[in-house]
Image 1 (cartoon, one colour):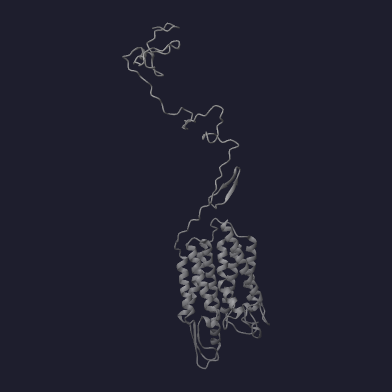
Image 2: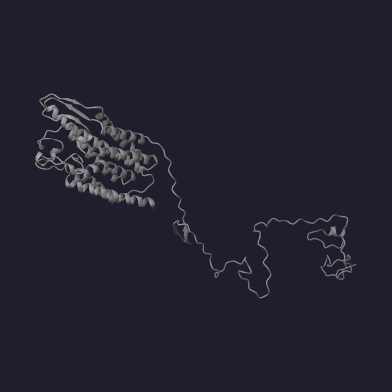
Length: 421
């Protein structure tokens, strides 16, 4: 058979001419043979002409075309003519301007920050818990609190004489001021608390331990200075006296040394630790309040003058040199730690200022309110002549410590708020 258009030979059952593409009439055969099978796309014409040659059909490639993304979406169902596609009939319809946006409701209370496209949730990580790391400041603080406890309940001084015209007997810490024992234990206990916080990486804890160490050393200095008053009287007496300083006296001196050493060791935590500084105005006012608190006990009363802070000439009473030294050490450490601590505008400095005031604040409160029989104030008492001598603190001292408490509270609250931000 031949193609009616071009005359090319055709076989029985062939539907189209392979040369000109003319459609041919269907044959009467109902079953296709191997020679009348439709030639696959891409097969060679020689394979159609030569039945003995195996038919090679190219395998389809399932790889996506180079540079284009393979469309894996299912075929869209047919719809009647004239029916417009909707979100129900075409799930693959692109979002248009009229499509309602999907609202995502989040129960996460995390804050958000503003961006060009709207609010973007910001996930705040919970602060990692700092592991405990033993530091030498903690064993030193424990040693100081043990030494203070021993010194508070053992004799510090013993004077014996026969027919003496001066005081004799045994003196303990509370015999030199009925509020002394609690003041020393409070300072030593604050050292332990601050040192423990420093072991957890809290820099203000290191400052608290250092300031409490300074407070402990200043308190010991005052106690030793007051203890030297009956010693000086016995030495000036006509009757010979036996003056004994038991081991409790030297344990107390050791507690003071531990306090000074704690102050020096706390400098290891005096950095900022990546945090912003405190408010400079609050720091300045806090420093001024510490100056008032430490300067109040220096104001003379009666006929005494300012020389009564280092000499007995205007006091009409002969006092030992260690008494003046003890007062100067306590008040000097209070002013130094308070002023430096606030002006550093760091959390370590704030802890230093708070720790340095714990013992003196207790002495002030108990002396101003007469909570014990014979309480002493910061620096023991103001210099005064015998007719004006009184253990009650001066009004300037009370005002100064009140300002210290107020500005310390404000600084602590602001530091906490800044940490939350």
